[in-house]
Length: 213
Length: 219
Image (cartoon, rainbow over all chains, first blue to last red; front, side, top):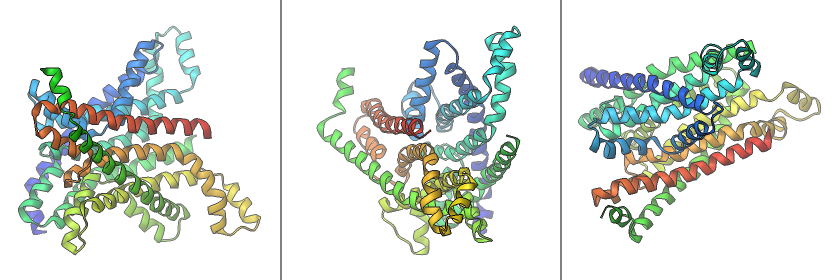
């Protein structure tokens, strides 16, 4: 307890950076992920190929490697801190998973919806935006929530590049106080504050969706 | 000069060193997969059976582990457990951390798979005189595993990727060895990162093709 009291500002700062990184990465990856999901579905072959390659590449390599790539290589040409390179890597990595989730959501929407919208004179883009995507997001909501939990957990990768997040601050406190046991328990509680309520909410959503079907 | 730099990173010595790291990456993955399949199935079945108190208790622990970053669990096992007298070598600390985390993830998949098996299967098996245990082992689990194979393979893919996190406790796996190699010369950074990326990609892409094939075959 004394450990928590003495280092509370440090933990809180780490919590703030973790939250900030997660929110930025979430917004970015939702936009990118939806974009790549649509690219995989449009009739144009070249767009499908680009969307597919992007998703396959980022889904199948470790987040840590992407982070190192930005931190060690890209930062030579574009100045960026550990926090920025970690967050950008997190965004690109998660967007591949979100693209898969959204794509599955779009495919789950009944085909008649698209045909009906097109028959009523909407363009492909309009039909996507007003008819398909709103339904797809509703279907994909539980999986998107799981991706967000993964994102929060994966943001601990920032600790490798001095990203000032919760894991990084936890390591600092552990190194200063030598009380690794209590420190990591406290860090765990801070992470659970973010992820656990979300996880229970998703389970509730899933049950609701199952009953609706 | 630039092209020379790209290939000079891959001296026979460095390549062998990196391949040794790949061996450790694969070793950690394989042992963790086996352990987490066993424990994940047990925990999943406990949650599915809805035993009073016990299932809720196990389910809560499972939820907590599932919602923590794997990196934190790795640090905890390696740096915090010695405080209470449990000293583990790096390799086994990684294996235990990964197995704990992946068991929790797999337990969810197993529970979901079991719940998707039709109730009539239980009733039919029980009516035919099979015990509860026999019903589980011979009737329900085989059907559930069929549905679980694709998500289990994607979990396997994340496991392979996540072994790179053991870098945090200096396990000598592929990503760590890559760092050692490009520490010799900064022009090695890009080629070594690309080579490692390629190896992870081929490994995991192969697994994802397997998942697709299994999905197709079993559907």
